[in-house]
Structure formats: C-alpha cells, structure tokens
Length: 67
Image (cartoon, rainbow, N blue to C red; front, side, top):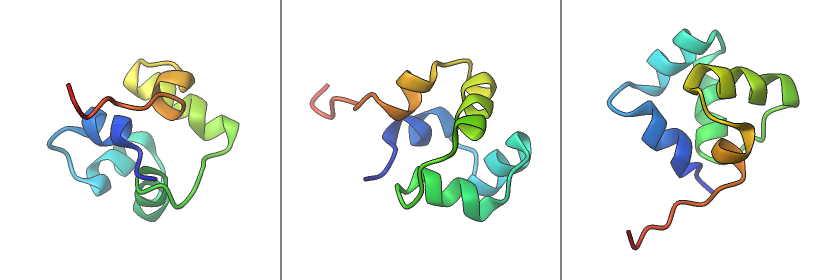
C-alpha cells in the first residue's frame, strides 16, 4: 500500500529530489513510498529525522482520506 504520509511530506518535490536530500537511491525512495519495500530501522530513523516526524507517524499511521 502506498505510503500517503511520505507522499504528503514530499510535497511538490520529486521522488528523485527527496532521495538526493536524504542520501539514498531514487529507486529505494520510490519503492518505500509506493509500498513495495519497508525500510530497515536505520533508514526509518533517517526519514524520521529528515521530516521531523516520528517513525510511527510516517510508517504506522493511515491518513483519513475522508477529511
């Protein structure tokens, strides 16, 4: 399932731009955002720090689409 939280946090930036900011390959970022890969703890923490959100907020929270 697509990680809608990461999509929202990315905003207008491309997946490539986000990957470069974080320091990971674009393909890795795209697979995580598109739900094809779940990152290891180290990368979860890196994303958490980058977006100033908790790991739970990024990976274990569903966005209510009805809002």
